[in-house]
Length: 474
Image (spheres, rainbow, N blue to C red):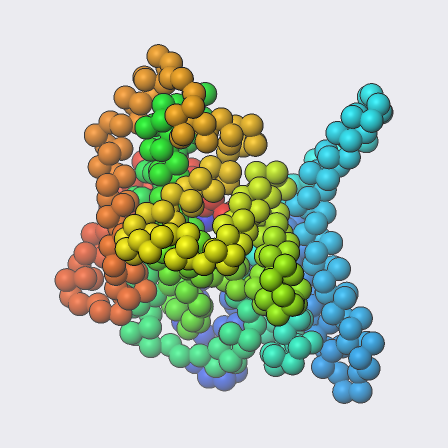
């Protein structure tokens, strides 16, 4: 089930919201509301593929058990370490099989063929990737690691932990919520009209970002990336459209998730902080997909040694972290190369210093330079394979000739509707006020504007074809 669907908006969500607020507001009622949210979340997650819920149960049970072993009175260091290993092996094993099995087997078959194996290749099963598995496995595993480190309190019971894992607002595409950040909210949380109203406002803004901006930009991006040889101008136009699409799609989902969480009394962390305002790639990764970048920092980069073991080791740690960051996004060489591309610029910035790279340029120029680097990276992220990505880079740099078809494509993607849509995207991206700040200053006028924006977005939703969130595939 997706947020940007009529079934969610007009059936599932109103029923769940009404049921939640009809339950008693007492300390016992809180546990009933948590249980109600858990069941509703299982329905939400398993709407199209009910068996996916079983995998979530496995992850939930494993990490709850691991946490109990680690915090058990009298547990030995060996038992605690064993429980941590059990959690990591179970979660990473499950994630690895469903996400990377076909990729690995395809690579093995390629090697067999290269070394003279001929047709003697291994049969490869077709494995369906469960939606959101990358998010909830990282989420549950972080609980076990934090408990093992002594940085998070042990959960009181399986019902509470199940609610934490399954919460439908952030279940499928994040943000990745850590137990330590919501532990207190699971036991008692505030429900006020002001918090609820800010949640509704943030949800509407996120919904509009997805329907009105991301989907419009996505049409341009899909058209250009699907072409064989776009002109240089068209290639830049297409990747700029993807620049807008992926931001408004994912940031929109995160805003909707945080907004929904507030309606149920939860406060999730902000996942985007105006990333296209960044003055360097280092700054970009402090602002983009914050829940993932901080997860990688805290559970991978720092445990590897971070920047504490010398310059060379720091660079190696960055390469490993972003190699795995790229791999986390999908079993494709394009994602891996995208991760290494990010690491390369992070290393260059550390090696030379930002002033050396950007030559003491004014901030607005460094913002432009950073966005250009990000645009080249997005080509790797969006292209179906490396040869296509390289061809697209060549088109961007003007090293391929144009054709009659390319000129026709240019006239198609630069029509008035697309130009206006892209201009609006640019205006929203680079204006100074973010959604989180805007909803803090609500007035009667802003409520009217939000209502009109919601009506416009809903009307547009009914005219669009099914367009799921990009990060559902991860």
